[in-house]
Length: 108
Length: 119
Image (cartoon, rainbow over all chains, first blue to last red; front, side):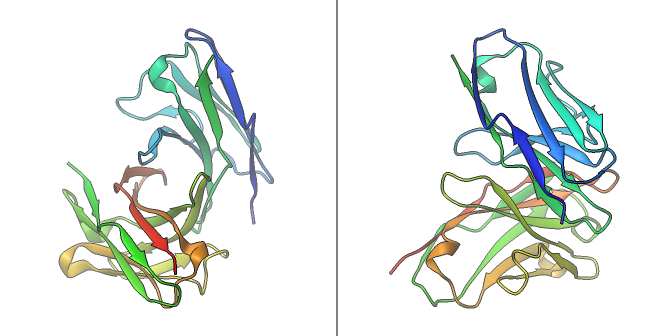
């Protein structure tokens, strides 16, 4: 099974700061990597698909990069409404999905 | 507009059975995979499994194989997640989500069903 790790597990940053989250797969997953945002009490929301593609309607301050085993998710200028937990998620050819453990983002 | 509407919260006792539902609308229900995700209280997201309502092809995460059953009734555009004998550790929020066709990602989500198992 492919395992996903994320770091950090949590972070606090100021409004306007650049925030970076990393996600690592236990083996090469090409670009089969998505990113989700989950606000408290809400269902997750897709932000980035296939490592670097911005979902329609998602603000451009969100971005993703990477391929193979190492991936990065960035918020270029943190906004108060970005307080949430962010999850990476990989998929394989059998449509078996695996989520990372999540990164909780707070405002300092 | 794609919508997934899940059944309401449940409170059950250990050993009881349960079937929760996820009704799709606004798209061709038989043409997209539907997946189920568990979120235990205060914890992260866990992938449970997936079903293609068109032919009922079903795939489970190894962690959930044999623990739950995923099914679908395409005549009423509804997917199901069921347990034959609940445990306290099944207490969680359960989400259904539609898998997008071209690039497998969970683009549309239900609102979640909270299942509480307590004696």
